[in-house]
Image 1 (cartoon, rainbow, N blue to C red):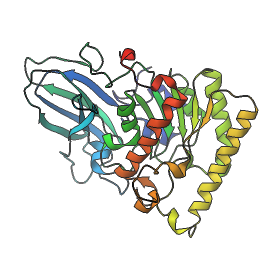
Image 2 (tube, rainbow, N blue to C red):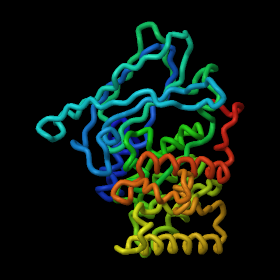
Image 3 (cartoon, rainbow, N blue to C red):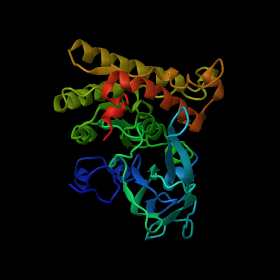
Image 4 (spheres, helix red, strand yellow):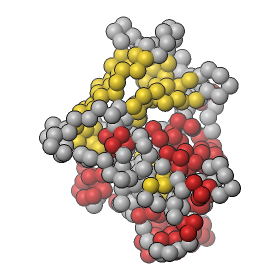
Length: 361
C-alpha cells in the first residue's frame, strides 16, 4: 500500500480510517532518515516540500522544512555521529507556500581528501511533506545505502529491528532547532537503530485507529508517549485498548508507556493548574499500567518517570535550566537530556538494541 508521497509515514489507504488531522500530519517526513556511505569528498542535497510556510514559536523553520547531515567519526576514543551541515535556503512566495512546493538546498559540505569511505545520515524535515529529494556526490564517487558494505563502521548501524514511537508534537520534534536534534533522531544515532516516528502534533491520543498501522511493523519495541495531548479521562479510556491491540498482534514485542517531560514552569508550583493536570494524567497512565499487569499482559513496561527525563542536565536541579519553549516543548538541551535517558533505558527493555559489532547488517 503506497504512501501518498515518497516520504509520508502512513499509506494513502489510512485516510479512510484516521481522523483528518492525524492523516494530514502523517504526510510529514518526521523521523525519516537517509543513511548512505560514500567516498565523495563533498555531499549536497536539494528537495521540495509543501506544508508549513512559516515557522511557529515551537516549530523553528529549520526543524519544520529543513534538513541536517551527520557524518560518522570513527576516530578517537569515542566514535560517534557528528553534525556536519544543515539547510536554511528557503523560497516562499508571498508569505505562503508556493503551489509547487517550497525549495530547499543543503549547501555542499566538504571533508578532507583522505581517500576513505564515510557513513552519513541525513535527517529530513519534521513538519512538512517532502515532495521530492535529490542527493549529490562528486563525479566518479561511489555511493551505497548505510550498512550495505563491509566498510560500515561498527556502531554506526545495527541489525536491530526499528523502535516505533507514537506520540505528540514533542515526538514530532518540537521544539528542537533542527531535525537531528529531535530526541527520537538522537536515540536513533545513539543506538544505531531506525526510529519510526509517529508523532502527531496536538493529536497523539493513543488511538487504536493509529495502533492498527503500528501493529503492522515488526518492531523491537513500541514506545507510547502521548500523555501531553491527553487528559486523565482520555488516558483511562484509550491506554488499555491500544496496549491490548498491540499485544494481540505482536505478542512478544515490548511495549513502553511513557509519561513525557515535565513542564518548564513546574518549579513555580501549580499556579495555572498545569502541574495538577499533568499529575492526574500520569496517575491515570500508572493505573492503566497496573490494571494491565494484573490482567497478565506480558512485556509491558513503565518508562522513565517524566520528572527524571531532564535529570541528565548539569546542576543541582535540572528544572532550573527550564529546557523548554513556551513551557512545554523541549529545546535542544531538553531533547539531548531526554535522548540520553532513553538511550540508557531502551536496551534494558529490548536487549537487541544493545549495539554489538557482530549484529551489524
